[in-house]
Length: 302
Image (cartoon, rainbow, N blue to C red; front, side, top):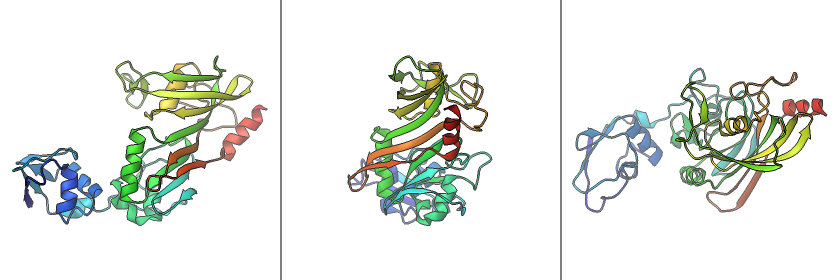
């Protein structure tokens, strides 16, 4: 057990920052956060789980000397990835449908995070231990673009950009019915469903959520939409489209309308990311074409 007494100069620092600067076992801020969240750090004898707690002069910080928690805790799997863009700081991956973003129940070694840990081994020290470098996610049955941080500074900045809605995320979706307005906004808070544990729902006490949409094409009783997320809640597009009476085609959770005969998943694709590069400030615009299964589904409607 290592013990530190906080000096006046160190007062006001975040716990994770202090440990990364003063403890060899925490080689980075992310490593310090993993150790804190594992319950291995205490202040004045009280175990602390919040990484952002501010320290004050005279406090005694104790940290477990076993640094194994800070090491990688994700299985690196040799799974092919389609890279839409890459430099030394970031990569934009074009996720295939059926791939989960990070490990969870039933998916320990076959996710995008596992593939990323194999392709870029150094990122296991960046971000959360089970989702290295990942700052946002896509549902398993949604294909398309995800940005991944390859360096610690890029991770910190990208995470901030996500929180501040500085990354424009554009989706392509096919929905049931034709919205009355060619261009519209769904502004409705989203929270966990009180009836179904794995579902989200419109909830007046939920988190503020805004989804912008534009009707690009009409195919009979279906509309092809360009959708822009202003916020990024779990299942936001699917919940909002269902709420206005136009559920996403193939969505078996929200709306549960009959799917197209030649489509075996929800028609939702993350088609464009626009943002300022987290390190250089250069304006980035990365696009992804519709996958072949979605293209075939559209062709069958024409």
